[in-house]
Image 1 (tube, rainbow, N blue to C red):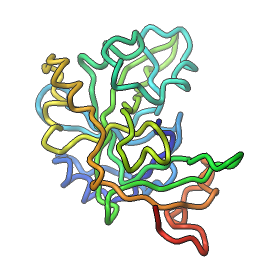
Image 2 (image 1 turned 90 degrees about the vertical axis):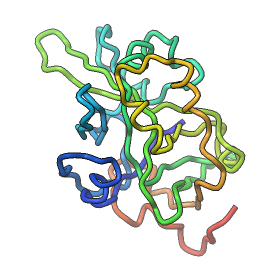
Image 3 (image 1 turned 180 degrees about the vertical axis):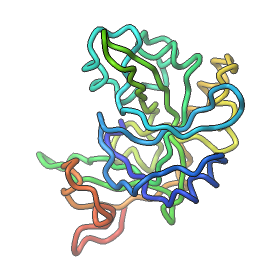
Length: 228
């Protein structure tokens, strides 16, 4: 699964990497958690990409209660085209979730050791995501999203059996295009990332609390070597 991630890259670099027309107004985030608002990139249909803020945890349009979104932070890539909560969004409302790292917890007996995972140099990348618009009775519309997951690659499998689906930049246009209805080709994009793409190291347990959001969360705990 993917339950926390970071996006601390400067806005100018985000705009350049994702070919955005407008410069996003974003502050560095080191511990983005479910139910929080964060940056998502979509293409409304005129080929121009836009970065918008959405709530993490997809609320299906047919939901009676927005609380269902708290359980919809991830969607399994193997079944995303069939599940009632996600299949409509998979057809027409796909998005990119920009990130420069994510976290996973490895079980160690009764304890869980958190790890930071990302590209060398903390280079930007994007998770495959889906978004939806929901409106409760008498309320303002809420736009929300989910991150698609896939089987972990051979490197990450030692930490967890799932990982977020990370798209290649060459796939961004096809993924974002709402007119693209080739479900097979879209599903093929959701393979695990190449082993050499990512590195990881342990971090301190302060990451466990969403209240903590500062650069030190990315660093190994004292006297811990980069490893594995």
